[in-house]
Image (cartoon, rainbow, N blue to C red):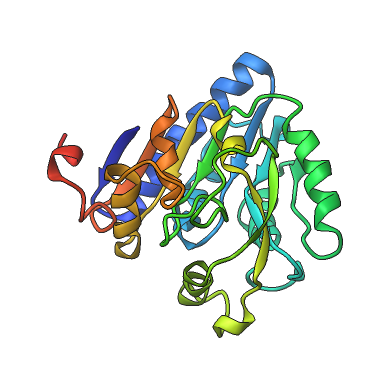
Length: 249
């Protein structure tokens, strides 16, 4: 795992976007297509804003999958991750090939269909975040590190649901759905390259668990340390609890 620490989250977002854009261009050059996974949430705002402003990316040959979506939440709801990606990535770039997780009607059918699509060919680069409870996608602790299923129907724990309220997506805890579709941990790890964006002080404890703690289902993001090409982008706030030796240079 490579760590990069920046003074603020805007600088973090720009640098992560530069690396992400380079990875997409490399895939397009080598394979004539780039298959990517996109994360959502407040932590990705600056990154996606910078990425969609990058030049010389043929987005028409980019195929996008996304990590997770609530079960039963309408696409028009402000917290819908489908809405988020349409507004912040798809519409801004003109991506034509995308696989959105519709959790409104038949999540099982959606997981099967999108799972077959994602398994059909390698993912070149995945963009991830880290939850306040150290979740990866919506794999809350204790996460399933073993299943080979590409997508899972998961129950969301209270810490995860409180994070959604804290970020302003929902007014109250009772408004947050209790289930979601989530990409599995093993499917995420199949990505050739992982770029993880985790700014803000509220992520500091989870970042410490991810980077310094035991690799364990109780700290799902810790599994990223087993991946051969993962870079975690932090700002000074999210890196504040780490051993200084890990963030020097």
